[in-house]
Length: 294
Image 1 (cartoon, rainbow, N blue to C red):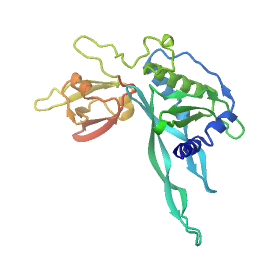
Image 2: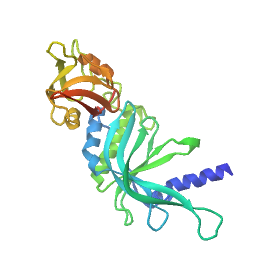
Image 3: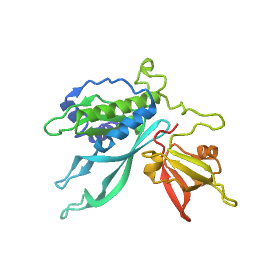
């Protein structure tokens, strides 16, 4: 009975974008060359992010659930994980009865409110489908990502885009990141030696390598003042997009006081980092995520 229940659960996870729908869509074999560096793959993913959609099953007005493509807003790259961030309408769950029937009726409805959601891919163990071509009922290019789930049942996540070049570039980026993480689905003899999460940016004598965040610091040259002065913020860099400005004084990273570039590197984490700064005499806090974390 438990095994039969598991099969029904799996069928519910996959339908209508699961095994039946996937079989109906024509698959396109695509085996692109891998990017040579993790940062190159991350930049390619960033370039196509505004066109990428995560397909969520949301309750419809007529009952049941329909696949809804949700725009991806951002992504975070950890040592061996890829996390997509987006917003989805909140689903309200409830139950009731119809007339005098004793069995409760369960229902789900969408609300006007949106909530943030994330999907994290363990790059070492995920699997990808082939590309799936558009069809009249679903005019998008797509592929699905299979994540190991509980009780041996995988979780299936569909990524979609309107154009073939976009989905091919996303597919190539994800496969490259899988290869960098050591996913056994990618033959090791095809992985460029520079495509690795273990490699650090080039360091210089006296200064250890740190993730490329796009800002430079020097100790604050004023008596009685602690922290670091941001002397330069590279245009278009993660620091620039987060809102850092030259002239800011960096006091702490993730709650740890910093007085040197080495202490900044030691305090950084491979996900969102909380920076405490002073600007024009006011203390501000800014979240900053490295584009690639090592």
